[in-house]
Image 1 (cartoon, helix red, strand yellow):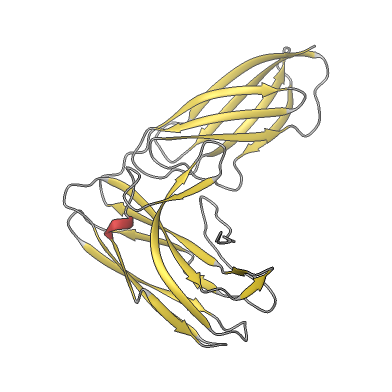
Image 2 (cartoon, rainbow, N blue to C red):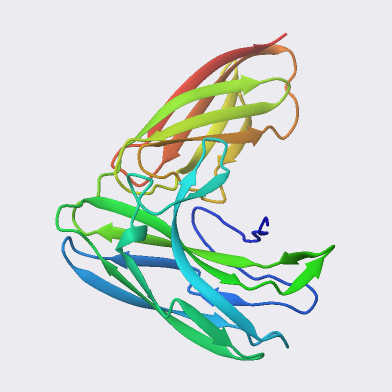
Length: 257
């Protein structure tokens, strides 16, 4: 049986709310950020809110690894599958819970970091329901997830590389960034286009939604020009800030024939 996954997942925020035939619940906080020293243990409480529905819930709570593919899509893996995984460090209490219609419940996350780790580690905690209704004999259940981001204090390394810039006619720009550091980064910046005389023709915001890149991972970002360019020679300039001391800078000459 294929389970339906409905959740909204962004590099900077995880906020989940589902509505289906009177069904809705949410978790708060929707992004769980924790600073845990190497060899240390920290905890955080998540509130599960079922107050907007008339349906009682039975939920299972568990963790998985998360990976962002270069095109920005996500995959969820067995705990311990990625080099930045903290899924196996996390204990959830309780691992199953019942929430009455109109009610709330609390789940406690305890994170125990090994003594030899550095940088940032990531996982997703899922809240998964039993089948709530059936379509053509197939039970449909839901799972909501929140990103767990664990940072080992004073060990962060922010280092990125502008891997590629491409202009794809008639008006698309693709920018690839590789995160060479050991923590999640959220690059932002400007993309400017000048003609051969040096006149600025267009300026675009790069990654205004602040989508993120996991450590040792490449991600591609696609931008669309406000309007097609006339036939001419151009130079594209990129300036990207990702929280390090220096900006990522790049240029690309291209022509419209």
